[in-house]
Image 1 (tube, rainbow, N blue to C red):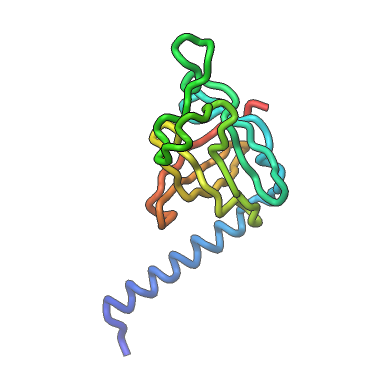
Image 2 (tube, rainbow, N blue to C red):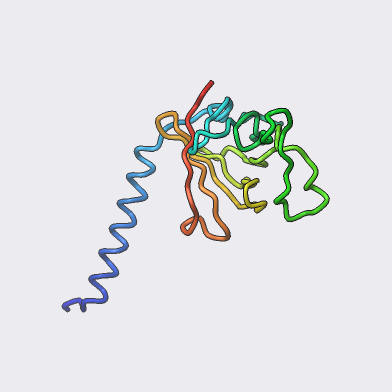
Length: 154
């Protein structure tokens, strides 16, 4: 019995998805949980972020950058864009912008990324490939997120 076009399309999509996921797993790297620990330069190369282990979680804090120092060069800027008014007086220096990431086989997942420039927090996942971090932030669905890439400094 001949298949109709819808059935053929469905079979092609299933095979394509199977091939994609099988090859992704096949070529994934074995990662150590602590591989993410270190000093990283964000994509704009304007801030350095120190990622460290905190118990079973991984976090990252701002440690330097032109966007966290006031115009006079003497003081650190404050978290003035924060949606919580009670947090707007905290310094951007040492501010945790990555929180609660857990290592999951080939990524650091279930964490949050705080964007101090907008004052918004996003769900996020961290992946590493060739010693470059991909931080993918999203609201609700990973597919519709945005990625940024960080390079190791130390």
